[in-house]
Length: 296
Ligand code: GDP
Image (cartoon, rainbow, N blue to C red; front, side, top):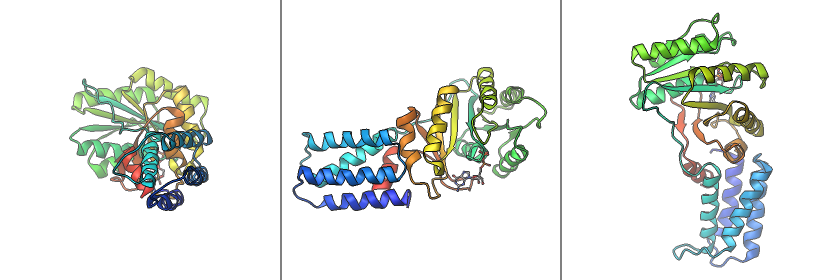
């Protein structure tokens, strides 16, 4: 089960409401108190939790009445709707350029799953009929270039690399030229990460950004790191500017705090989620489906 602790607590709380024919204000209040606790225990950002509970409360005691649902079911529907909204409402797609190649730049801290996600995304787009080219721009982590090449070989997707002696800007530009001459309609650039955000890394990313003008900058963050992931996203969003997020390792024992806070805090949508180490374990992110998965 995804976000096991959170999901089982929310499900238990809402189950108590489901079959009630009549709901008093007190019933709703005590249920929402339990929902609040469950969200906080799952490491959801405190302000986000407060606003969420407020919105649910307002709607639950408001005049929203749907004849077909019991009062308990109505509260459950409101929680479901608001959870969906919290995670971005609608699914957020990649922006594909009308003038190929579409350039996608992946950024993030070391270990978040950037290189793996680059390959997964290339596979995902290939399945959709695109012809991606992977560009090995992480010249600092010794094994990153080799890792990308191995993954590209496995997927039968070309990988452009110039070793580690050229600047990531030059590698990216040459990669894009290569894509143009080869007829690749998507370029996915893997960039260097560090253990922590530092100015040098950010400057390099900014320089790639201003030189290649990507259509999408996707930040890769590890869901297991909870609010740290949210802070990283806030930082990248402010310093570099990002278009969306790939949230990895949702198959692990992440508590849910990152998934539920990141859009509300940064304003940037989760576009994909990583559900495992295998290369087919990348899914488009659907807020409504995730909400239903959590609420059971
Ligand atoms: P990078 O330093 O950001 O490029 O990170 P890597 O792509 O090398 O990934 C770091 C580790 O996380 C590797 O062992 C990956 O297999 C693993 N990983 C990446 N994405 C996922 C995921 O969605 N689920 C799981 N369980 N592991 C992942």
